[in-house]
Image (tube, rainbow, N blue to C red; front, side):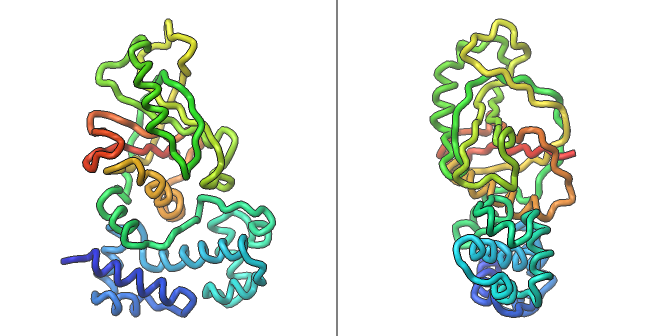
Length: 291
């Protein structure tokens, strides 16, 4: 069965009727499948139910209107399918952790809850290039020696950072056999998920696993990844699409999972499956710390 075409039809119908009283049965009818089969495939391939997608897209649109218009909150609430500003406020706060009034006052377009429309490119990316249901693993403590650079979510400078550390790679002592590389996000040192957006500058450490920091030259940063549980997503293909994968993690998975996030640093793991920045068959794993 070509479920991708059915999902495309479902998304087109949803987006065309987002401000209307959408019934999931009507979405399924527009897609040409039964509610049961469409909803099952929607969850399996896109990581959430049809109803969840509709709700989060309405709230994401509402968040944009709060920031970029002067419309009354009650009007935004009604247009978003809520019967009252109170119901809208409860649903909004559950996602963004603040009321619509405070969100508007803060003027911060946060990454959490920033759920973009599923166009054909993003739909294909989620179906073919992301494991939308992560594997839960427990990792031992890992030592990493590398270098630190600055980046933003919208302009991830991983290629430049890795070119730099690879040029200096031979100067790192005590490298662990196998050569696993780690890109460690230090975004939460000064920010939280609810204050991060595409343009906030944060630091990232790119480096390699070592079994000791002894004799490490001063130009390298020492990082210890604590032992613990992680939700692991696999990203396939070019790293140019990595921001879209993170959009899925923080805009969909984080808002629907029963896992409790831990405030250790998240990181990317590069092993022998990484075939190059733009290689279509390249793979890296993204580790999100959980309790």
